[in-house]
Image (cartoon, rainbow, N blue to C red; front, side):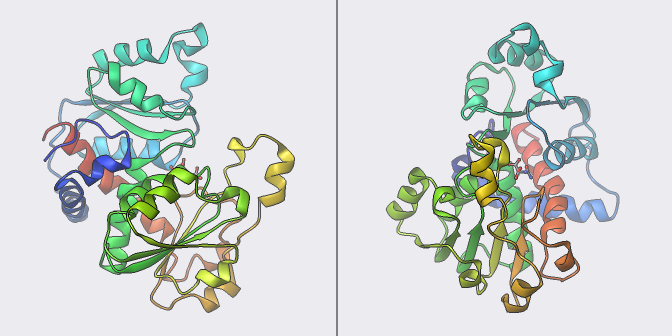
Length: 307
Ligand code: NCD
């Protein structure tokens, strides 16, 4: 079982892949507690090529590489500080960096950019977000978190809340959930930010139970509430953004009505969607989720680097 790269979440559905990644992430998390992480990637180099802002994704990939004994080269603002400013194509940049590094983690504003990169890259490409497209390593850490927190990846109800149109973490997660058993998905969004047709079609084809809702209160019985940020940078006008920006806020009132055994996730960063007042509730799992990103990405690096 091995992936050569990770461009879209559906690759995680290849036979045995998800199980192996979750098992390895669990082992890495355990060995981290005893400072005994195997230095499997000693001598390997990861290049982080980010054309869009990032905190968690870039740092957690870099931490994952360092914890496994590897090295990191990085540009956090590639659109300003790389040869793109001189007119270099993405393809040329990838060919060059592929000569320096053993794996490239890439975030880019264009949907499909990672796929383009993978067609010319001599080394594995890991898609760390391609515009409003996908964010498959986030789906991996989300699944790892759900498994750890509620103990299963089948037979549960998840409410996805916020910007389902532009939220790439949602797109990747939906692709995986569509293949699980007995998952009910509550899609809570304003009409104009509902899940794009291609994903709704997938849910219909796979006979997944789902509901489109416009009131967060109707989703508080879910086992997992997955909040998302309204993706300001993907709106055409400021007015369009202003109209929907605070449409759903999970605060104390929502917490009081929320499933006692449920968990609240968010890929972060949050803006106003989750009130900091609820952070100390044990059901608020989003900071644990962010930390899990390191272990999930360690497992992914191990797999694509063939260790
Ligand atoms: C997400 C992203 O970049 O898509 N952040 C992340 O990687 N954890 C979500 C977001 O920006 O809203």
